[in-house]
Length: 117
Image (cartoon, rainbow, N blue to C red; front, side):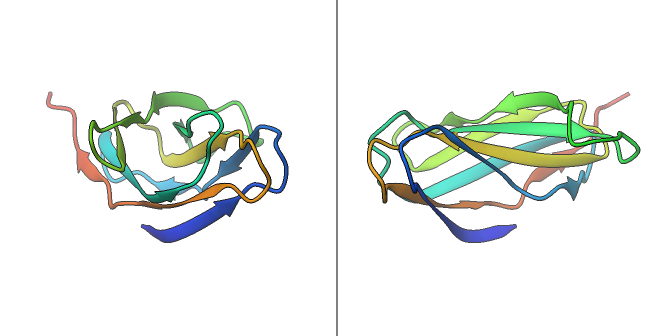
C-alpha cells in the first residue's frame, strides 16, 4: 500500500495524520502496519481505522471501526475490522517529547474477507 513513509515532529503537541481514503476490498479486513523505525519517546503511536460511504458529505463524522494493537515482540501493529463501508482510511496520532522525533512506517496490503451468510 504505502511504502516507508516518515513522520517527524516539529513540536511537542499531539499531532494526527490521515492517510488518503481507499476503497474496501470486502466486508471485513485485517490491516497491518510495520514500524521499522520509531524514535518517539513520548506517548505511544495510536492508529485508528475509519470508514464511510462514498455519498457521505463532509470530512466527518466517520465511523471508527478499530484501533491497531501491537503484535508482541515485533514492530508490527494489527487490527481486524468488520462491517466496513465503501471507503477506509487510517489516522496516526502521537505526541513527541522533543522536536525531531518521529517514525517510519508502512501499511501492508490488507487481507480482505466477506461475511458469511
